[in-house]
Length: 133
Length: 436
Image (cartoon, rainbow over all chains, first blue to last red):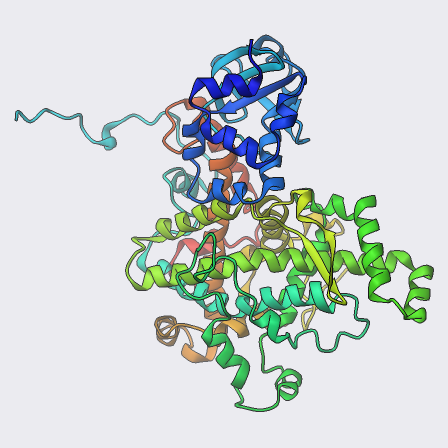
């Protein structure tokens, strides 16, 4: 098996996410043993944000890190675990609600592929960037 | 090529969810169609763009002087000259304008607006020493800006992490370092600090909110200037276009850091470092809208409130004195702070707005009231942009095809409109053009 970041890199559709992880200085943390649950937005999810949004965040690593940490939970949680609770505390501190079981929805994003197992956790692919609030 | 038959247009599609039954159902349906709380008419567009421009000129002073006060004046016990902005801060390049900008919002330059500089030189009275302009109150009314800051400070937890951080040990340690450095060699003030540490800390908190507001408005001024330029060249087709420009602007700058740096003896003290991760959207814009557009505080001035008759709510969370609830005429005669802003805007009205006011009501005699109501319309449009931006960030696209998603959006819009059910709200008034 590969790590979370290695899995994302080989998928080919997480270029923006990986660049953001590096810009925010979170690579070492996400390469560590964890384990983590990562809700990974695809490139199109970042592209759908209005112009300038990603650029402003990339220019400001602490602010970017906060948004990225909102996509990460401590522990490796499969879909079956996640739907058992209405919300989960993100590494950012704000809760991530599980809005629907079928289709599987996390906040206002749909999970397009769930339960991708990695050495140091689980990845669930989502179609939108999720934001606290 | 054989033309293919196409399906009939949208008009014949069955709506995916039933209509709203809310009192403001019409407004909700308009929001769901991508519109604003303000109806889409050519005059509404003209009014709001004109007043955005008139607001942006004094705002160009407010943000610079707020940062001057927060970063330089700091804990001066007798800040009689806090509105006498230094040349360095008057010349501060706006991060969102000018060639040097990494994210250029306004096509214009990064320096203070030429109309602002002209007004600072002459005011209404003409050329005279700055001190006389200041004492005569023939100047930009910074007291309005400070009143907005105080509203944010008093209402405290209006969202985001900023207020909690001001109570943290890290903040207290940062503030302590700055306070000691500022009063170094001053045994009287250091002695007072030892006796009353919380008083000094509270002053620093107030200054942190001052920095917060300065950084918030540094963004809004170029946004409004650019909207005025786009309108002048015919680039907005209607009110929704203007609202969407604001929505895009909100997202583009959402991640801007909010911080408080103080400069003492040439050294920078980070009272709130950028590394805390505070953002323009969560720690500045959203708390500002809640504290200032909705709540603010009873007006100090010539209006009085009968406490025995419960004319001021005992629960601060029930304050609804913001522009969205203002009855402009009596508020206008109440004094500080709304009239201060109205007077500021009066100085920078574009000719097409002055023309509208001349033709209605009492013409030039009640320009201040008419422009106050225009300002109210414009802030309902800004609030609409905030509501749409929140919907976009936290909920679903307007053209989503999942009825559950659309109902989630519906519940959100209805909850927002619930805020305007109270009798003081002006949402119903702004639906007609005759409200002036």
